[in-house]
Figure 1 (cartoon, one colour):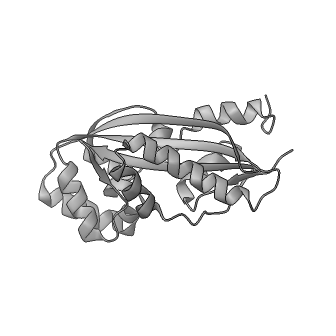
Figure 2 (cartoon, one colour):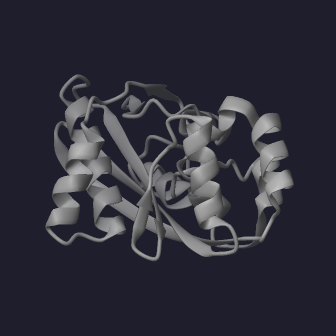
Length: 198
């Protein structure tokens, strides 16, 4: 049975795969994501194109270190009316992002690409649409204090699977996509590759 490698440092993605019964190891890629995003944006790319390109770059790079293994690259983009958000570097940036998203709808785009021996074999991209409620500044300050540095681990400064659920009035789309991976299509593909039981 082929090894399965996640080309990501994301603890959430690794945990998601392991909880789903995927025997996976993590080997993060070293891709300059900011430079790739800037280049693609300059060329007129959409957020979904960026997520897929980054996922493939990560998987292809890590594939060089794991002969015969199935390597999964993944990436997520947050798009709010053409503005792209990244993981905030500190709580001040997280607060500013949440203020920008407050009372508005945004889209989370999660992409995954499967590579073996440097060849792209599969990909999937999915979108979820989230509407943040119009919470007050007092709630926001309390949320940031309670959530702590966890707000730095995801685009937009929230984690829907925890306290961040209180920020939203509506979520439309697959929960796994919100967490950063189109998990169900990926599991289908891994079964087709006979690395998971049918």
